[in-house]
Image (cartoon, rainbow, N blue to C red; front, top):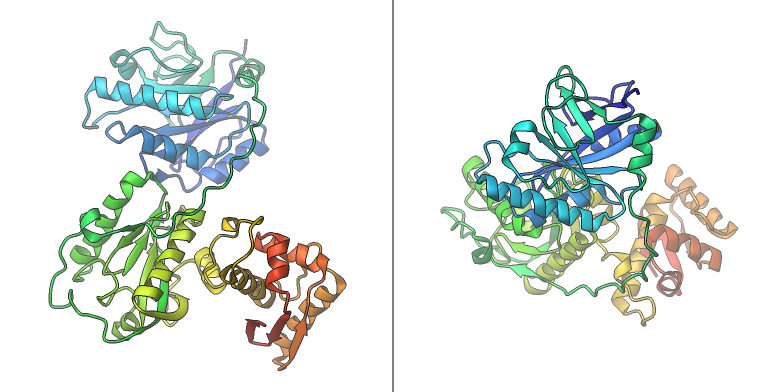
Length: 473
């Protein structure tokens, strides 16, 4: 019998070896840390037809629920036949063996509950296998650097990591055919349940400085008030690597930002007016009444509030639907209570920076709309709903779709887009009114992720397009 051979890889390895028949790819660690090349390795492994496993490195001192949420958020939907593994090596972690074992068992049970149709297993060393109990969920992957297939344990095992140089190298206790048959033999997929009704967004969830544990500001600049009305709000992101985690870790991350700004930058306080986490909760920074330090210089800081999303330039780079809702809540809070004017801009508007990143800046340019799926399509649309959809459609017409008709567009809409593109190229000033037909509405609705009825109602009065300027008519 020829045992199947495979490898386990993380960001420390640039690729998966050519002779691999299976591979375990590190997906996450702790409650926040991700792997920059996880997605690329996963695409490679699946395209090559390898048996794939995803693993998470446990920090047993953390709340287990947060680690489970983080791992499941990273791996997402997992096809049948792929494996899920906990890397259990709590060396140097401030927990007892009993506490580490309890965390291990809780993680295995929670992940199995979320992925009942996939094999869930445990990776550990011989040392830790002898220090913990014998619960490994569906299978054991043991590390022992001896002859392949002969680990020094009495327990049954499925995978043996027998070498760690030059790469972590493993064998399966059987052929590749055996492995495929075993991996794909998990419980049958249950009949799908009816989709749950969307939960209405609760509105502004504001956490005060005292609630998240802010340090007091320092003088001479900490108490400087805004001298007058602000033009609006500028949106920021972190600009560093960041990975979404459970909400119980967010206050500590806000405190970390404040410490960096005060102790590293020498600022009098956290630089932002407000910070919005991936769960849509708004944390008060300098708040409504004190000038921020995040927009670039004193005049810029005085002109707009600064609202930052906990969003990275690497790792988690796309805002969640909840985060967009929270950003919108913060913007409206600044407008209604600040007062901030109507402008919604990115940090890069008026200052040389990449902030707030391409994805968030596109949302800002579209008017910072609430997520389209927050609309109740069986309820009458409010004026705000109509305006929001109209802004998004007009923006896409004028910027994102110039010269490129969306799927389902009628000939008139194709002509409109071609016309706009040609005028833009030649700097020709022109104005045109246009009403969308049913096919055009359907095509645009798909592009903006809104119900066709919402798009039709938003554009019932037509669109007025002027080269260089767009507005709902």
